[in-house]
Amino acid sequence: MIKVKVPIPDGDIERAIDTARNTSLYLIEQAERNIDDALRMEEKVVKFIEFIQAFKEKGKGKIHFAARGRSLYLGARTLASRMVQLNIPTVYPTLEDHITYNPTATITGDDCVICFSTSGETASVVKKASFAKSMGCDVIAFTANIDSTLAKIAGKNVILLPAHSGKDEVLKKYDPKPFTPLGTTSEYTQLIFAEALARALKDVIEGEVDSSNAPQILEKTAKRMLNKAKRNMENSFKQCEEIISLISNLLLKYYSQQTVHLYARGKSFDMVIGPFKMRLDQIPHAFVTGILDFEPLNRPVRKGQICIMVSGSGAVYPLAERVIETGCMLASVTSYENKLYELSHIRIIIPGRKPETVEDWDIRQWKGFRSEFAPEGIEFEISAAAFFDGIFGGLASYIGITEDDMRMGHANIQ
Image (cartoon, rainbow, N blue to C red):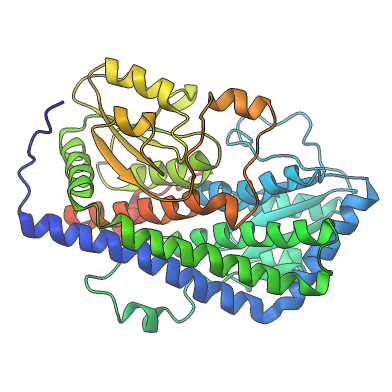
């Protein structure tokens, strides 16, 4: 496929790439600061671990989740997925919960509701937490706002996850400045914290450590994840020509209103593609986006469009072959030179998955395959999440989008 040159001044695209790189690196550094701050109240982590362990042993009641938007993708679904792996009775939060309620998700007094909301004022989250409280349920809140309505409902069961600890000091080193609008730093912090917390929970439940050691396990796991992500970003952004092609073609689709198709499965969907789509949809005169093979958001694939596929193992290649047949441009982000990489017109490598014999993704799941707990099993997704928030920062800097512009594109009815 011919890569048509997009008429973008060199200086502008270079600045966009610098903004993208700085956004990714800042996001990682800010998350580390936020988690360091959160762990000053390590007794909250110990209490959470002990509560969930006792809840599992009690064998009565279910864990429910309340979250919306990127907090649903990055916070709630991350922790819920790991709880399912640990055989904790969990009502997994689907994307359609607020439209078609899960008939198994009735809340009783024996249940617990875990809430994620940066502001602590998300209406549907507060509504569910309030109802659960009235039923006699335990309500646990992860929020950046200790004075919020949600925090008041949860009472002592609040884990404060700051969004901007030491922000001014951290930002000093970055020029051009990163672009992390709305709750970006908070949501990425939720992702890291949830994965690290799940690792600590696993170690306690399996008897490898005492609950009093959980905060140390959480901190060690978070730092290892973030250090790997930082190293991966520094290396991935050296692929200048491929990143120029990705950003340039996304800009071309923005100005021509051609569809940007997105595709990933499992954790790559929750942590990377889903949140990235939300950002593309929130800017003024938003991108036209679609998610392949997801009926509510699927759009026809045509020539002149672009499809971005994210898969550490490259296991999504069967759908990539069908995309290529339509004449659509294919950009992939994967961990090594696999079949997906070979099919793609734009290829970006982010480490995290080791070369393996790849079988169909669905069949792997039906067989019971699940990724290892952090930090080993999540390196690719953690890094790719930071990468795509960076790519969005680069796009926004070129187009000239501000955070106020983003608020205009944010959902205002729920």
